[in-house]
Amino acid sequence: MTIKQAMVLAAGLGTRMRPITDTIPKPLVKIGGKPMIDYALDALAQAGVERAVVNVHHHADQMEAHLRGYRGLDILISDERDALMNNGGGLVKGLKLLGRDPVFVMNADLFWVGEKPGHPTNLERLAGFYDERRMDMAMLCVDLEQTTGHNGKNDFSMADGGSLARYRDVGHNGVVYAGAIAMSPSFFDDAPNDAFNLNIYFDKAIARGRLYGTMLDGHWLTVGTPEAIGEAEETIRTYRAFA
Image 1 (cartoon, one colour):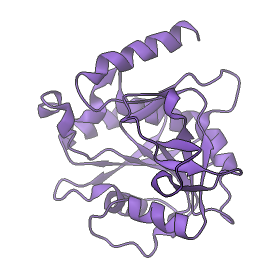
Image 2 (cartoon, helix red, strand yellow):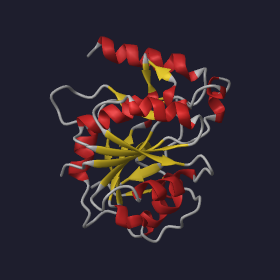
Image 3 (cartoon, rainbow, N blue to C red):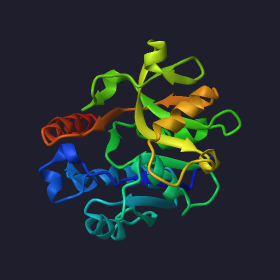
């Protein structure tokens, strides 16, 4: 399956990145010479995505200007200037600008490096793994040891075949959610139109036995504070040196 549309969640305030985010939105903070959101947009374009919705709120004018200049995707703006919708409400609002076919959902401030050249990309593999008949969501996951900047905790437990449960409930075969999902927009047809946290729907999919994950190829990074930038850039330099 080739997924041709996506939603990129980019409207957060980036409060832990202050004072940098006093003057620039977090997705535009450069890591390794590249704005964080461009790692996500480039990965989507490489996987065959044609259209992406990006939600904006904090320093929205800067976000819109940057996205107008991005080449490779048809980008639509979901404007949250009036009110932040949290990640769940933001996703629901953005999905209304897209069609009913399967969609990628990505975070603008989480990304990875070190994919194997000549092999399917992580998003291509995620699209191939996703099976709408059995899954409400398919998540890209990563081993804790292959993360930089993470809080040191596992999010989910992965069983044979990829089914996921909360790590706190199972406590073994732990994995970290790597910030990319393949899903059908119809899974959110019953969602509210106001702000809510996406974790509600993760738990809904788990309760239905329909949350699945597949493992990331490479190394995953999250940059939450100004102090974390140097560590992330050192990781990127290391992987580029061996590319």
